[in-house]
Length: 241
Image (cartoon, rainbow, N blue to C red; front, side):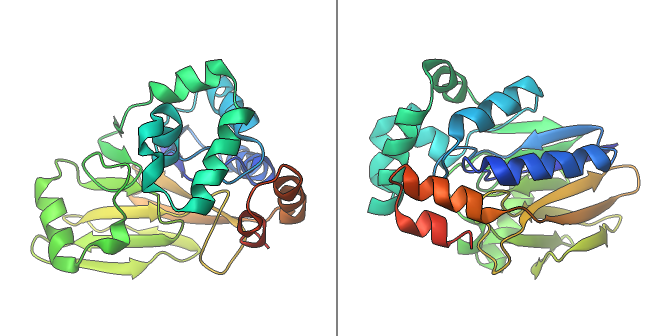
């Protein structure tokens, strides 16, 4: 089964539409979204409506958490907080109800899916963990593979039973070794922060036991212009270019 894992769309409709087209051409059997479909970008309502129309299951990200429970807004820096306040004005009550009920984690085909880090954190960044702490995460994790987002960068953490080794996840195909366990950071569709502005997502083939990291080009200038027009912080636009 080929499962597309997407994350951190952040209201970027242009990137999302190109990723969906790429998924459709890649014979995907199922999809899972790791949250933060809203925030930073100009089209949160349209993005969520497409996720719902396509019946793509999603977990809650920290941006959904802050919209659903405003008491969490203080966790964000001033720029991100301003973005969230604008985002709240751009979504419908139906979308608010939908994101308020998103789960903190999902298990699909024996894999764990969560926004921040296992088992169900929406706010902790994988990059904040030492290799020793990562090993502890694996020992508390029931599944052999977990997919996360949140950092907007691609990474794979491999656990051999004693040590956790982190490595960049590059474009292309990566075989997963029998007897090893993995945490896979799938990067960001709508706000990549790895020096390459193409939209990123990962295909997981649980039969062939491999990953394929996909880099999808789109016209970020369109999204950036809409971000500025709606009054979002300028950094939300410049990060895309």
